[in-house]
Length: 511
Image 1 (spheres, rainbow, N blue to C red):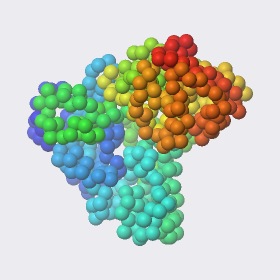
Image 2 (cartoon, rainbow, N blue to C red):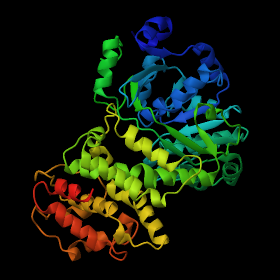
Image 3 (tube, helix red, strand yellow):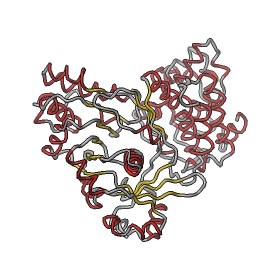
Image 4 (cartoon, rainbow, N blue to C red):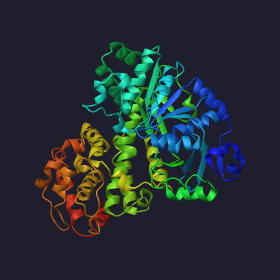
């Protein structure tokens, strides 16, 4: 069974339990090439498991008649190896918490294009029919360095990924200035604003006031909240496909972050600001929510500050200390499962931002009872522990600020301070068995590790010695010492450092 031959062998694939599209894919591809409507930049696992998958469903239902033009990231290898080699088809495997899996061949990608294939991309961006350009290029993909060479080049000479995208918009402006929507679906705060600022940086450097006016008046950059976990392709899933007879896996590196298939959880959320300048696609018919800007902002805060991300970080910190390597295994750990619930329900929900369109308690119920417990989701605490110093001010700091705004004494909190103390304990690089372990990458490790790695099991930490950390509002969102949490965090830290097994004992004591 080869993906490239799936249309000739549909019945065989169906016998093996795969859903295979029934629409006329050749006709869809022809129509898409003639009158493109949707381009996507950043053709990785999230795109293939989410946007491409729901487009496939909409094509099958007859709601869409055109597919997606997928543009590769910084590596052209991905387009050649993971798209064109399989006629732009891929397999999406949905890993359900009940142990079942759904396997679907996705045909919604009508064309794959490399970012350096300028002539073809300009043809696409000239098309008046083009409605929306979506992005999953990660937060760092939007950064424009101060010394970005493209800022000193003409648009047609742009070489960087983001510079090329800005140049394509400039080409659209020069080719009739048709309206367009640039919709970021990356997991960062106010993602549309981040994208807009980056594009305007290029426009300002290029010095064409007409182009800047076009971007302000005819191009929209709606914000969105996206939530779907898509780890790198798992070897166990690859083995399932191999046993089904899929022949395309052996030629690919099983350790690489892409493959001919993508595995993902069943839960997914996409909430988008309803600001579309050239017609809005009918994505709501597959669960996408269009709403106003304020509501999108509230949904993001609900997720990031209360219902998912703080719970994730809590599990990541203590999971590393206790030697866990899978989040789903942590949820079988009685103390860690209780900690997750306490952080979410007891200390998060009382000050949660309620967006109105998604119930916060139902969201966190799904997180705790379905998503984090999913045995098929190979997500690791070590991955989630990356960049913790950058995550804490948003994932916990906003909750602390909400408590202060309500006039509450932060010293009454138990579990959030316990997470902070756990993170300081984590920075010693010693696990609960007394062995050294590797810390996940973090931009502040060089600053923080020398302050914490000097402590051994049995040492007592004086608050004055860690005040530079406790008072750092860039880490915690607030000054912990000034807001009555310094003593509590230090006390917890000393309990966690007392001896081998102290992490487990301290968790049992408090959760």
